Each structure stands twice: as C-alpha cells, then as structure tokens.
Length: 450
Ligand code: PXG
Image (cartoon, rainbow, N blue to C red; front, side, top):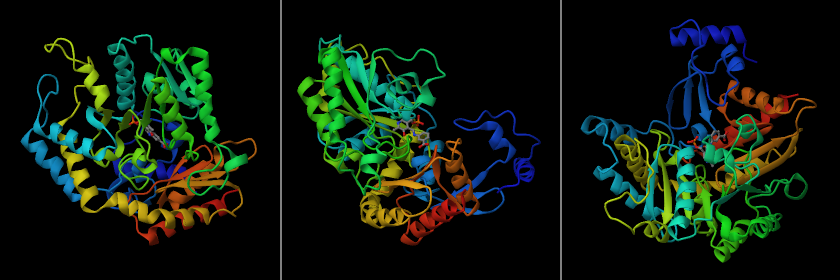
C-alpha cells in the first residue's frame, strides 16, 4: 500500500508547492486522493510515467479515449503546426477549412446515411446537442409535442443537465435537484443471474427492449422525441448489449417515429473493432454522439453525427437565419480539428480498428482467464473492453474495486474501477504480451485483495 504522508510529500515536491488544496478534482474523492496523490507526468504509446519515475501500462486508454496510444508524433505535430498557423477561428458565421474536411471524413466513416457532423467539445456537449437536435427536428416536422426522452437505468451520458437527466446512474443524479422532466428510463440489461460470464454479447436480455413498448403505451409515441442508449455501457461497469436487444429498439423506433440515438462517446473510433458500435452491430441509429477517441484524447472535442434526413429537415425557412440556434465558442476549434484529422489518419494508416478486431479473441480469453479467482462474480467483454465484477466486501461496497485498482497501479498497470467492477479498455496498439501483463496484474491484485 502507498504510504500516504510520503506520497503527499513526493507529489508536493514534484509540483514544486506545499499543498494540493486549490484544485477541486472532478469525479474524485479529493481528500483521499490528496492524502496519497497519484501523479502522472508524461506518456508514450502504451505507458504513463509517474512522478516517482515508475512506468505504468495504460489499461484504460486514459479514460477510454487514447485509442492510438499516447503522444503520437503525428498528432502532436499537427496540433503544433495548427497552433502556429491559426490558433482560433470563430465557428459562428465564419469557418476554417479543416472543419469541413473533418466533417467529410466523419461522414465517410459513419454508417448508413449518417452524413453530417455538428462539432462540440466533449461527450457531455455532444449528448446535449443530440437531444436538442432530436426535439428541434420533430418541432420542424410540425410535431412539437414530441418532447419526451427515454434513457436507460445505469446509462451514462455525461455531466450536463440533459445527459444527467437521460442518464441512469443514481449517484450522478441524486444531489442535483430538479433534472429535466418528461424522461423515462428503460431497465438496464445487467444480470448476474442470467448472463454472468457471457463471452461477447449475452444471449439473455433481448426482451428487456420491450419496456419501450410499455413507455410508449403510457405516453403515446406522438409525445416521445428520442431514445438514447449507449450501445455498450462503459461507465456503469461494462454492460454488453444482449443479442437482439438493440435490433428490437431499432424496430420499435422505426415503427413509431421515435429517433434512436447511440451514445458512442466510448464505443466510437475502434473500441469494438469497427469504426462505431453501429457498424460493428449492423444497426444504424438516427444520431451518434462522439468525443474521446475522435482526437485520441489530445484536444477536447466531440461531434454529433446525424442522418441526412434529419439535417435536411432543418434546411428550410428563411436562409438568413441560423437553422439551429445552438453552438459553442469552441465548436470545430482549429487545434481540435487538426488533432482529429491526424488521429483519423493514424487510425487508417495503422488499420487500428481491424487490429482491435483481430486482438479481441485473445483479449477475451485473457479476461475470462480470471474466472476462477475468489471474489470474481462476472466477466464480460466486447471488442477491446472487459469488465471484471467482484463481489462487494461485506458492508463496504466499492472498497474491493478501489483496492484492486490501487494494487494494480502499484504493480504498474492503470485500470478503471466503478464500484466493485474493474474496467479495462487499452489502446488499440496493445501487444499480446501487454494483454498478458494487464490481466496477469489484475489477477494478482484480485488474489491479494481481502
Ligand atoms: N457519454 C458517454 C457514453 C460517456 O462514456 C460521456 C458521454 C461524457 O463525455 P465527457 O467528455 O463530457 O466526459 C461519457 C464519458 C468511466 C468514465 O469511469 C467514463 C466517462 C467519463 C468519466 C468516467 O468509465 N465517459
């Protein structure tokens, strides 16, 4: 275990300051962290370097975003060149060439007739943008009464009020007062009873999509704008879509005119071994939200990808007025566009989505190799994502997850934990030997935890 006062002193020295107080850290137990800080100071390819000089294998692509590995020269150089050429350009009534090029590239990459991109700066903004587009689309179509939204229990759609309201993680909602009204939640698809240790998509659970029929029966489809789901839920602890489940949501949405939004902030850009989960699963939603892997995490950026029909519905009315009264100061920021274009080039040049697909079987075997360890109650996986669920320690939910996370870090591997679920989602450049190291270390940490 880390010796807390020593860690504090080391961190303070590395930072050249006496205390760590002023920085209010996001989604972090601030007091616990500051008593024993974990500081990363540099990164290259599959590794971080810690302030104490230790190298740590990145088992979670930063936070599900660094899909091509860290500090890739091509991306760093593209950002630096753009910063010198033109640092900022407003996207309101003005533009710069790279934003158009990037939108074209995303339209090519997206499945079906999804062929327009609206730029944001994060997953949360992509989610709010997608929800606004969905409601405004129906309004444009003369169906202004379609305002209700449907999310799912355990869904994570970012930290804005829209995403928080559609999202279904209790801790992310309960302290924040009034959320958006008019939102229903589908049941989540997690079941230890019926689907534990499924390899890939569970065979159990497609029927849970029928809950959408009940919501429609309650409110009538004519009042519902959109259903938003993560095709594979990451934050809640890796929930894999049951075979046939998303297909059923698509069918119901087709029949009722409700828009289907896939939140692909995590699954976009190769995570499952294809450009998007939509491509991987062969289901074309109406809107896809993205961020993270779009720029390999190097510059904050998101994009909302929409079907032609939805975009075109806005292109009527006075030509002198914005068709969508929405946007951000940094929408299509030049540095972000430069990073995204270089990132997409790298994904293509190194064929990283196919590489992820080709490693998925090996990754699955390695993850499921931990099946017989004490405390392990489920292992689930898809593409280069695996979740290992541990039984909660009596009276201390989350303690085992945190302990395994810390032990892994001390042994030189960074994983993510949510409650008692360990999540791994390494850069797509990972080598087989590093997959062995990743799960070998997680296994050792689980064996050592009490
Ligand atoms: N949608 C999904 C599906 C996400 O996973 C967001 C939206 C929000 O993105 P921004 O860029 O606004 O953070 C996310 C973010 C975790 C974890 O523990 C995952 C995310 C964020 C924080 C923690 O897995 N994903």
